[in-house]
Amino acid sequence: MSDTPLYIKVHGDDNVAIIVNTMGLPEGTTFPCGLSLREFVPQGHKVALADLAEGEPILRYGEVIGHAARDIARGSWIEESLVRLPPAPALASLPLATNVPPAQPPLEGYTFEGFRNPDGSVGTKNVLGISMSVQCVAGVMDFAIERIKKELLPRYSNVDDVVAIEHAYGCGVAINAPEAVVPIRTLQNLARNPNLGGQVMVVGLGCEKLQPERLLPAGAAGDTSIMTLQDERHVGFGAMVASIMEMAEKRLRELNGRRRVTCPAADLVVGMQCGGSDAFSGVTANPAVGYASDLLVRAGATVMFSEVTEVRDAIHLLTPRAVDEEVGRALIREMDWYDRYLSAGQTDRSANPSPGNKKGGLANVVEKALGSIAKSGSSPIAGVLSPGQRADRKGLIYAATPASDFVCGTLQLASGCNMEVFTTGRGTPYGLAMVPVIKVSTRTALAERWHDLIDVDAGRIATGQATIEDIGWEIFRMILDVASGRKKTWADHWGLRNSLTLFNPAPVT
Image 1 (cartoon, rainbow, N blue to C red):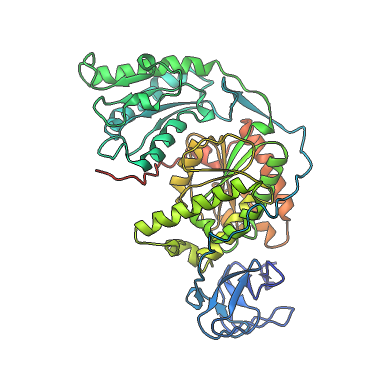
Image 2: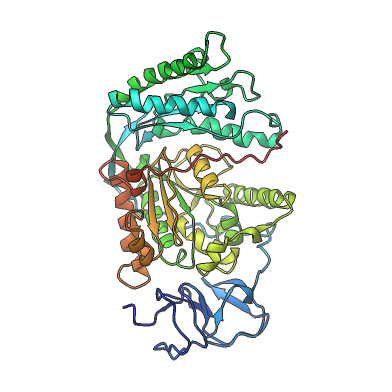
């Protein structure tokens, strides 16, 4: 198969295709259709299927991803510099709820074994999360958690882990600025993640702007849920650590009593994300994840897709899918907010993609966005969340976040995801301590090289060894197995976890 020259043309109107072969293809390679390469074209990069005049639209996914910077002959490599970035879709004239997909048949009978919480949510892990109200206490927290894991956790075998909800926030910030709502509600909702079992615990300093009480859910008692280092009863460092450990052990006892019970797949809240994307993302891994998203929605679950700058240039394809005009306007609201946010920082959407994305064949953010939204599948968009808001409905949800893997992951945790599915083409060892992360590769070469980091190889779609539907079902079934604790992701096997990273658009004083 590797010796046969292969390219992928996504849409019938496309005038470019991407090269499938792992090592790329040399000048003179001829395809069965008669196309002959005029030069070497790397894997994942675009080849012109027709002569293109300067200024002519370059089409991929049936959409304009740019315009030819000069005349381009058929069979030429269309590398990044030959693609002029087109303007972003105007937000004022987008169609709203004009092409709402019909409901697909319900998918019944699928279950997983999860930890049911008093508020009705369900965890896929059983984790003690310890929040902090200010970065000042991070060192003490780290020391205490190391001791908790070594001395206490072995006594409570039904608890999977102890994690710190750490952050670089809480003081030296404009705590009452309008946009401070984003990091504050993110911290509030992180503590409510279903995998933490409702056992909220906050470590504070005492003099910070973000007072610990603001991080407690309604009804939680501050005198039993908050520990402050400046409390006069703490004489010395050892007393501080002892207080944290005492409070933690009470919660470990509660969590240890939890047991997995059979839950419908409708109790899943799955975050879909991509990182280290390449030109295969939009034709293998993301469409397969999109198929799995549709299966989850049919089963009654909640699915979140995110990353504003990797949606903005495809927003005209999403607003028609909104279930109603209110949801369509909410999509536009989040795009407009981010446009203004980037403008205030004297940058724009062209800051995305990364050098690695470009090396993987993505010429610009338009091409990247068109591939990114494939994770959303074909279901109606049922709701929109601003950064850090908690999901409040079933179905396909757009959860607005930056495209940064770490920030997006943190915000999806705050929105209540109990699982994540993460696609990658270039490769990243990304993981989260709080929820399992299933890694899906866009290329078989990556899955083979990173055989002990990648969970699902979607690259088989590119070579015809599997279909989008095949891999979509594989991802769906793996989600149920991982959520039940029957399978462990490679990231959890190795204990890989990225730090939580708050999105703070408010001023730092």
